[in-house]
Length: 205
Image 1 (tube, rainbow, N blue to C red):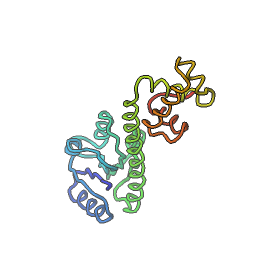
Image 2 (cartoon, helix red, strand yellow):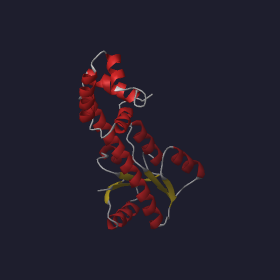
Image 3 (tube, rainbow, N blue to C red):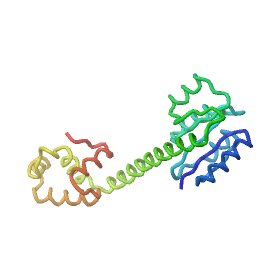
Image 4 (cartoon, rainbow, N blue to C red):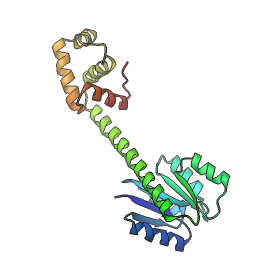
């Protein structure tokens, strides 16, 4: 399920947009101020923020800055009835997906929403992959981590016998540790292990 957060102090505009987005199959949460949104925002699945620029209290740009300070990444589409070039440039440079001036075409907003949600879905997938990989890495013993590092560092140059000599263990022991590492890291191949190792900050030569 994809969620669109709509933050706009104009009740009529906010509710009209929410109805339209709900009609197009989105789960919508409405907020009349930036503070209300920030107090309740919890990103548990792909989402996008449709955010008004000019609001009482926190402005849209201030909400964007607050999200950045919290390291909460969410694609933002700014909408405004009082746009100007410096403001739009600042918003885009700070990471906004789009800056739309009211009245805007619904199709334009929907197109940008699709792009934003696809981007957030990809971002969340990478975050979950990293978390899962680091959890797997934590299950390795110190020796298994050493063997993994040597396998990755010598992916194109070191044989198991060379790794055995370097670690002062037998060739058969390296084979056993290699099998354990591959299993525990859920690696389908050495190439796959190299990719997982990058996530764990272990880099090949």
